[in-house]
Image (tube, chains in turn purple, blue):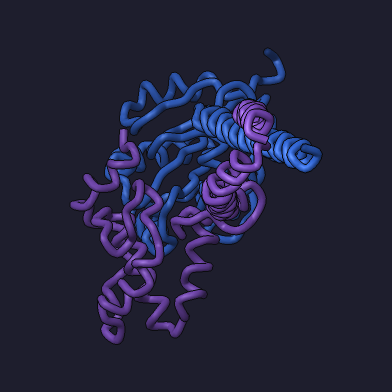
Length: 157
Length: 196
C-alpha cells in the first residue's frame, strides 16, 4: 500500500516523467515560485524543499509553465485548481476560513484593550484610594477616621 | 460632613461601576472562549467524519477524463463499477496497472466499468503512465482531490468495488496483483442477468 509517504519511496520509479526542465528556466526561477507553494502530500513542507517524486513533477511543471511565459500568479492559480487552496499553505479568505484570519487580530485587539484598561485602573486607583482615605470616603477606614476627628475636635474645641 | 457623605457615595458608585465592568469583561471573555472551543469541536468532528473511508452508498462524483469526456457515477447505475485511485508517482500502482487493464478489456462487455481517478498528480506524467501501460479505460484527474476526500482515501492505490445499485461492496487498500482475488471481487458487483 502506498500511503501518502509512499510518494517518497517511489523516487526510484523511472517512468511518467514530465520531461527535462526547459533550458531557458533556471532552478532559482523555479524555486522562486515553488517556495510559495506547499507539498500536497506532506505536512508543512514547502515545494522548493520537498524531495518527493510528486513534488519533483510539480517543479517540472512550474519550469514548463515559466518557459511558456506564465507569471507567478497564473502558476499558483493552476495549482490551486489542481490541488485545492491547501497548496498555498494558508486558508483562502472565504467561509469558515475567515475565522482563522480574523481571530488572531480580534484576540490581539481584545487582549490589548483588556491590558490597557487593567493598567489604567492600576495607575488611577492608587491616588484615588489615597485621596479617598484622606477625605474619609472609604467606608470602613473613613468612618473610623471621622469618628476620631470628631472626638478630637470636641475634646480640644 | 455632607461633603464626606457625597464623596463616600461617589466612591461606592465607582466601586459598583468597577465591579459591573469586571463582570461584563468576564462574561465577554467566557463567551468568546466557549464560542471558540465550540467552533474547534465542530471542526474536529467534521474532520474526523471526512477522514473515514466511504462505505454503504457510494458518494456521487463527476469527473472529466484526460480526453475531455465527462462521466458521473450516477449515470453508471445498473453497472458494476471498479473505482481505482492512483498516481503516476505511486510505485505500487504500477504493480496493479497491467491487471486492471486486462480485466477491463475482458469485462467491459459484461456490465462492468473501470474508472481511474488520478490523485495529486500532473497531467503530463499521468498521460505518460497511461501510455506506458496502454490503459484504455476512462481516467481523469481528481481535481482538488474532491472524490478522494469523499471516499476518504488514505493513499494510493485504493480500489472501490461498487455494485449496480451504487453500494460499495468492497474496498481494497493497496495493489491488486492476484487475478483470482480480482475475479472474486468482480463477482460481487456483477449486474444480475434478467433470469436471476
